[in-house]
Amino acid sequence: MQPVLEIKNLRKSFGAELVIDDLSLAVPVHTATVLIGASGSGKSTLLRCINLLETIDDGAILLDGVEISDPEIDPDEVRRKLGMVFQSFNLFPHMTVRDNIALSPIKVHQKSKEESFEISNQLLKRFDLLDKAEQYPDRLSGGQQQRVAIIRSLAVNPRLLLLDEVTSALDPVLVNEVLSIVRDLKSDGMTMVLATHEMGFATQVADQVCYLESGTIIERGTPNEVIGNPSNPKTKDFIKRVHQAGRL
Amino acid sequence: MAFNNSWSPSSRELERRATRSRISKRQFLIAAISSIIVIGTLLSVTITSPGWEVVKKTFFDVDYGKEVLPTVIKGLWLNLKLTVIGSICIGIIALSLAILRTTKSAALTPFRFLAAAYTDIFRGVPLLLVILLVGFGVPALQLRAITSNVTILGSVAVILTYSAYVSEVIRSGILSIHPSQKAAARSLGLSSAQTMRYVVLPQALRRVIPPLLNDFVSLLKDTGLVSILGVIDAIRAAQINSSRTFNYTPYVVAAILFLLITIPLTRYTDKAIRGSYSRQSAEGTI
Image 1 (cartoon, each protein chain N blue to C red):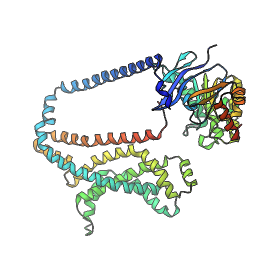
Image 2: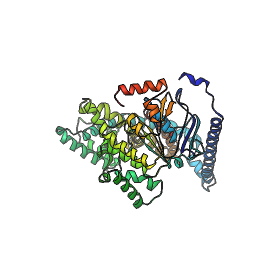
Image 3: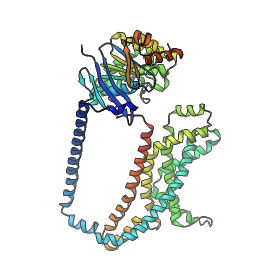
Image 4: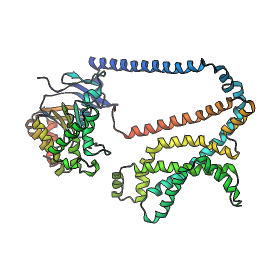
């Protein structure tokens, strides 16, 4: 079956600095691909390239078999099919939680206000945030804000969800409330690519784990292979250091 | 990274580069065509209009323009002097007012109140009226200690009004800085004043530079209003000349001189600000 996302020989540099080097990856439908690796290994840049936030230097990115790295393609059209959640939430501070969620359904997907609010309310209710609908983001805790940000990206039924270290700015208690949403989405069959430092979570949720170093995938496989029993010495070293930091 | 020397772009990438350059060429072409159409239409409508010959003679008389240029430049020199001195004074007064109005110190409450009253009044009264009141009213008091030099009094009036405008612009910039910045600074042990000086103001001022630039340009133009007190600035010099000969070319000369100052100035500042912004932001193609 055709993968939802296919990346072929991707290359991206910032000036003289090569950030992604000949990276290939396929993400089948209803699966979660987890990217692990130290900061600066290229995880975030990869996600930003998929969302067309960066112009790539070489290779190709295909969404449902269509090359979205084609310069002639309308990036807005592509992003309509993608959801992205950032490390720093990036909620709009001048809008209530409900308006944050309903913005794209109303303005981009031309849904009625009533329908969009209905979608927002259902999602908020499902993730236990309905009482915050009228609040402004700055009034919420970090975990709540990040959950709202995830809900916001879900409101338009994305074909693929990109999560960029969504728990890195949160404390361990709040991390769980965010991760449980992601687990829920996974069991719903959402196709996802996530960058994370939470190895335990990666083990639970991933169908495929990729270890990145210097912009390439050094090792890929099931969580048990890559995190549980890595074969590449570089991966072994990384996992060992994660162990030492007490994060597994 | 050292190993990228061996890389050469794939055929797909070369194709993509060709497409990108095709797109940018297409966009350049569209820009050129639309510019030619718009500018061409404007020009042809002007030149073919029935009164064009007369307008050309009375507004665009090159020889007469050259003749009046020195006197207009002399007038413009006054505008420039007033603008430079004025903007320094305005900057100091406006910044103090803005800081005063955004502090929460209890001891400063009466001053805060006065500052608010000041901005309310001088923002609301037309500049021309302030110039007349200060320019004719103050000398009428016949106080020995106070000058009756109308140039100075006129610029005082301009400074009074513009300080009110500019202080509001700066204040809105200060208020636009997210409270978390203040929280971060205070938690590092910085005092309230240090927080303002090292964290809030640098961000706030950078944010308000574009509107301040606007105010600077209109200050340059509004300094001409002091001519109502009898001082000769660029516009007044042009007026004197054209009322003598019934030829309006001096006005056009004055307009061109103003543009020669304002356009390079604003363009340069705009570019400088953009540069400092992009150094601080991590955004990609959006």
